[in-house]
Image (cartoon, rainbow, N blue to C red; front, side, top):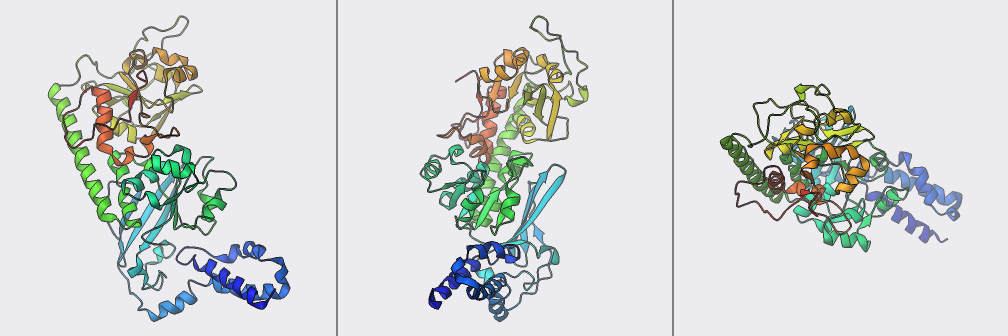
Amino acid sequence: MKIYDRMLKIKKLRAFCHSFRGVRFSFSGNASRILRGVPLFLGFWGALVVLPSLAGCRDESSGTQGNLQSKAPVVKCSESVQFETMESGYFSIGKLCGVDVAVVRSVVGKDTLVHKYVMMDSAAAALGTDLQRRGFPEEWLSAVVLRVPLKRVAALSTSQVGYMLRLGLRDNIVGVSDGQYIVDSILYERAKNKSVASIGYDAGALEKLMALNLDLVFDFTTGGDYDNYEQIARTSLPLMLTSEWQENTPLAKLEWIKLYGILFSVRPLADSIYEQEKQKYETLRNLIANSASRNGGVAGVSPARGGSELQGASEGEASPTNDSLSTSYFLPPTKQCPRVLAGMSYGGVWHASGGNSFTANLVRDAGGCYIWASDTSRELTFSFEEVYALADSVDMWVNPSAFGTVDEILSLEPRVKNIKAFREKNVFQNDGRKGPGGGNDFYEGAITRPAELLWNLTKCIKGSVPSVNSVDTTYKWYRNIYNF
């Protein structure tokens, strides 16, 4: 090979390394992998030429870029972060040293993952992206630096897709977890014809992400078997774990749209959407509460209680006692409203949302009495027998896991046929809006339209909703599974 050709390859390698400036990345653990990609026919002398290039690549942010930054004024920054007041409990945004910053938290079991981000536009980055030279506090020196606006991202959860779609950022999405479950018809078709990559979870997922030339990978973690964020973090790809799905209220979940507004430089639009939706939601919530107050509760609905004799039990089935569950879980008997059960049984264990969960708070705002409302956790588990004891104390049942038909539910747990809400055909699932491949819009579009979601569930629980002109009543995520 001619020496010119060798040098051309080295220049390409330098360009490859150049793209990693501004992100936490070092070739110290990756040089061997890169060297394996160098053609073997370069031989010993070719390798000697390449090694200095790798060293220069590794020090790009502190070498060449550092020389450039040395000519720029060093910003002295001794201030502390000025965080905004937020509804969210899982992310914070603010200003530090003249630029936007964010702290994003994800709870995994008993652990909380905390990641910090510094977001600079071209004008801010002109002063350099070296946080130490810019005088950032020591606790921020390991933050991920992102150049905004982001142009190309992979959104590996449908909620992330939902925020971006509401902000008109469809074209910025070049990768999704599985295109089949995208509800937006245009993005679904792009994934189908492979102009948007479906990343998946197999061994080739990382290669697909690396090939997309991404500005950021949006991912999330549940602590389950499909988590892949640790593998992504070991690559050169900038990564952000979002945790909107862990928020406890519809408005806190909506508020994440502000972070996307910063990342894509459309913050005024994001703020406008948030404020409009918040006003609609709070107006509707107040009307629902005032209506229930005027009516003195729902006629014919007895106070919540710990359990009762089970009507219509099959022969040979023991009727549960009212001692199965502590009455401390239930609302006081002076509060009268439709009692709502949530969740489903798997292998004799009932999994339900806790009293401080998104579901419980949405049910409360919609005028329902969630039967575990006084619980303070996010998730609950009971034996089926404990829930069975409540059979005649439940007026309606929401979110029966992912099951969309009566037959599906009965095939998994036949005993639910004796639950009052099931007998009276008051079982509501949140899959009323689906995409071409069966994706559920409850996890994509509904997150940015909380007022419409509240209206929809209130219709299911109470049968009527006070008139609010600003609410679009065509959105119907919740449906009765008996009505196809």
